[in-house]
Image 1 (tube, rainbow, N blue to C red):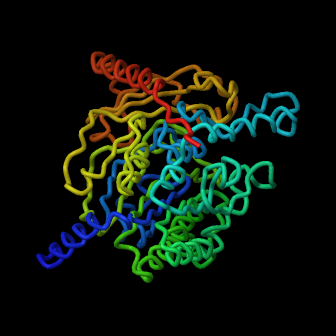
Image 2: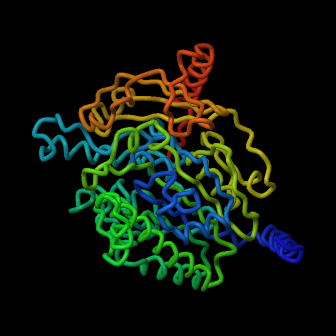
Image 3: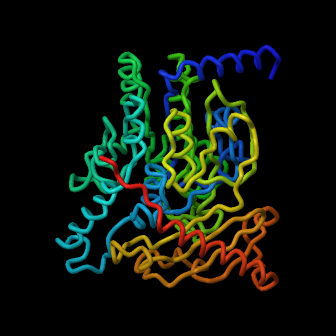
Length: 452
């Protein structure tokens, strides 16, 4: 950065701090079933992600970001509330399929509604931002009924029991069918003088892996298995939609004063021999291929671009966004407010990050322990995974190795977790186990209730 550029950045920061009546706009970009290393800027030699590469180059980018729970619904609920899955209560995707009548039975449908109702009992990011006059838009994946259940002002998803409401019905058109609802909302909000929050969670690169032929051919011509070529093409297609969104913010002169946060909901490793399926130790696993994701924070008027290797968590997104918006962070949010670390380029005062994982199907809806499969902690170079015996009646084949334990890895030296060092370091296993136990007991006492 030149001296002149630095002076301009300092000047814009001063102006922003003095002009508190215009807080930054906020855009959350959430990719879906996207492996942590499947980006050009993360070193992938095949996948092309020029828009996300550019965003990473303009952001405070944490290459070692994590989601606490590597399953889409609980992970997205964490990003929307700033709470761990066992706090907001949405620990799985669906009710148990062993209920009378199965997935078509009345009890199953009733429990689907009961899971959605859990979002009514906790505060959400759109709700908390209203204090500063934010208008909010939901697009893409949204499991928790209508967008109104998340306290968004506008949205695309009608939600269960509407047809297709399980994942997000009309919301899932975003990205695959363009981003016009977003650009219209941006125009409307800015013309009315409101700062805005946009939830952009396209169903990408998630299945169905149906990329445009023009992109698919580029990867198919490399001789890759069809399933992998389609997955890579989906990533590039997703990247193109981000280019359109980021370009529109630039065109409208909004990018400098817009906080853009990027994260994936969970990881994915494509099965090379089976279309649209993933391999064990990726999605829904505590392994790096399940829980790791780059996390970016871009706000050019306040943050210098940085590439950082500290471990951060998606649990930090809500408190950081609130702080950027000038809203006091509720003291019982478990994540870290990273605003000053981002602005001052200072180390994060944290000795560990934590996660937990549950079965895909929820059995006892008000007892998270009933389907608890694992908890994990990362402290410095070490990662410990402990396994539990919660009921698991679905996705069993994807839990091979998940229910073994304890597992201890030096993830700085072994990021693909090939060597379990638990037997060599029993004292470290004990210390990290105690840290996990203390985290869980404290977390249970702190839930941010819905204030409406």
